[in-house]
Length: 119
Image 1 (cartoon, helix red, strand yellow):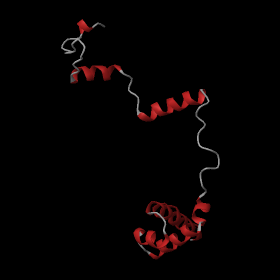
Image 2 (tube, rainbow, N blue to C red):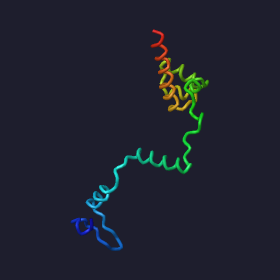
Image 3 (cartoon, one colour):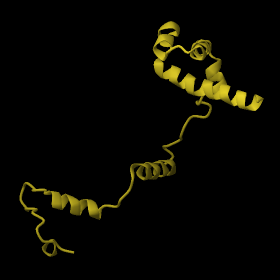
Image 4 (cartoon, rainbow, N blue to C red):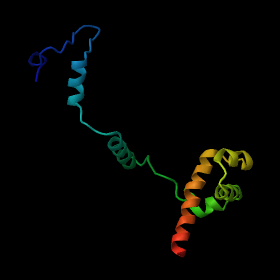
C-alpha cells in the first residue's frame, strides 16, 4: 500500500508534518488493538524472561487476623460496632480514614461470617 493509493491524507512531506484527524484514525487502525492490561501482562512476561521482574516479595501481604489484631485496629473496630463515624474514629484512635474503611470492610465481614455460621 503506497501513500498515493490513500486519498486525502493531508500529510505534507516537509520539515513539519501536518497531522489531521483522518491521518490519526488511519495510524491507530494500523496499530494492534491491545488493552492496557494485555500490554502490562506482556511486559511482565518479557521482564520475567530477562529475570528482572520477581513479583511480590513472599510474606509481604499481611494476614487479615494479624491486621485486625493490632491494638489500634481493634479499638477502631469497637468504635465501628458502636456506630461511630470514620472521621470521629480517626480523630480518637489516630488511624487513617482509609485504614478505618479497610477495617470496616474486613472486620464486619468476619462478624457477619461468624453470625451466619452460628445460626
